[in-house]
Amino acid sequence: MADFPNVAAADLPIGTPGMRSSNNPIAAFATHGNKLFAGVGGVTVGRFAWVDGAGVVLNAGTGLPSGFVVHSMQAIITEFRGSDTMIIPEGRQVSVLTRGDFYTIANNAVTVGQAVFASLTTGEIRGGAPAAVIAGYIELPNWRISLACGATELTTITPWSV
Image (cartoon, rainbow, N blue to C red; front, side, top):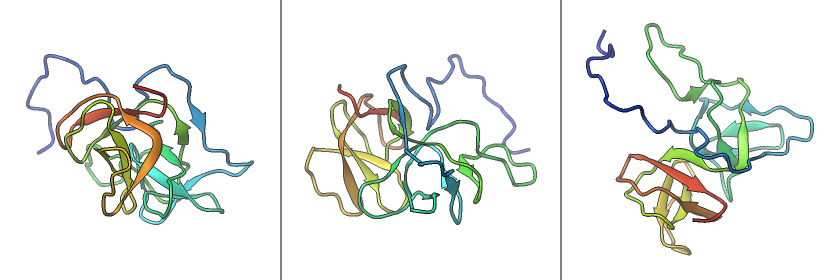
């Protein structure tokens, strides 16, 4: 059992990707009576996603993403003896929020106040200067980094203010 715990942490983690990081208001993607479902290959929690007209959600797309895939216990461990996953399998219902403060993983070292950019191919985020041009990423208007961190570490993002 390679993934059996062999270290005890002194402190609890502050959160996991996709969790809300505050009690500020949230807003859900308007589905107009339709349900949102994970598309081919599934959807990763804690990343941005695009929703098509049929309610199919993917972590890749063009233009601004539809919202953020929030952690609501919908990912399922499908591998025999698997230990964890952040993937919502294809066909499962997905929760997409358009506003709120969330934990996520940054692809680069980030500082408070940087603009949030979403990858057009994975939905992952990175921070950068407002109005910067980053190949393969799109700047998310009004979204900012609200917790500094190193590359591939947990950070928080907000559409409100920092």
